[in-house]
Image 1: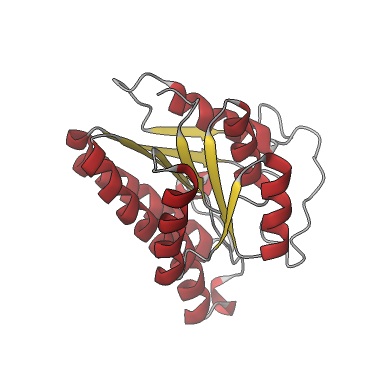
Image 2 (image 1 turned 120 degrees about the vertical axis):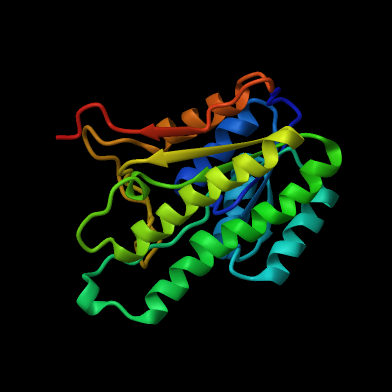
Length: 233
């Protein structure tokens, strides 16, 4: 697709992978709407990047609907949804509660699904569109203390496969990107970005994968990309 002029929503766009993805898209003249729950941080990021910010929680159906209304008003429609918003809980099974699972799945699974459902309505009506699900290599293989987060990303991977089967006849591309470990504010209570770590990925590599996949001509698409650091050891 042609990135210049494309209308894009990036959920969780005020920090980390979402912010960098929005930055790279805007550098290519895309019209980008970012969402986030922290109003002050979202407004600062939107001003820095030249994006339109919508204060919204993907766990709220009302916020989802308002996001799409504000997107229509701000950029005139939608061509790409990037489901990037996510949270994590990492504790051994013996320490987990039902609420831990519910809280993470509300954002990582149910929120992503409801955003995609709303976007798919637009894409079907116009005859084209793109959904990018930012999952994780945790959705490819489980690990100790990963029961909640890993399960949510396995669920996202399954949803991506189902949506591809449903939506390809409508010219809707569903792309999943699986980052491995990237030092960001993800998982930090203070939401402060972690500094880069030698040998580890940065948000730039993940954003590059997303943008590169979108730039492929619409006659084809890359269903799934996993991004690993070359030598993180």
